[in-house]
Length: 204
Image (cartoon, rainbow, N blue to C red; front, side, top):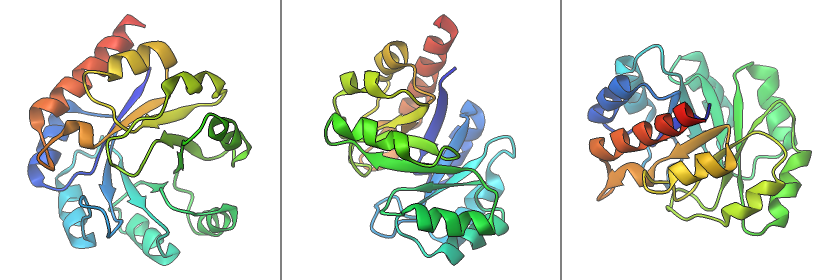
């Protein structure tokens, strides 16, 4: 069954919708250059309102390790999602400090990038993306070369996610811009996305 991650939670209404829709996990973006950036304080307040049945991922780009560990230790996030140039040395140091799960994002620009990911740490969940939260997709036919589990991200909406799940069977789908209107989370789009994925899961 394909898991659902709703990313870029910024407001209390986003959390209220998530609590009702019960995705498999949600995400807070701590990358300062992102328009979905939330401060530690804001994320803590949002997390306090989030159902304890829904894990929260912290999305980081080349973040100081101490900051990542602090948010984990404070219970603001449950797992780490890395979208920068973090290498295996970074991952090794972080693993010494926490046993939290990891998701590592890889930008897919050409077909060969799919195979390159295979050599990465087996203990890390892979996320394949076309960009950086900009709603772009890559050529999904390349996914037939992915002989590993992965989250699919980039340009997903309720209109195309059914085909993604049906044809490629990703471990999970990660959506942010596809459930927004004018830069804000759209509850109707969130609902449509979750319902669509669950319908495909039921038909699998």
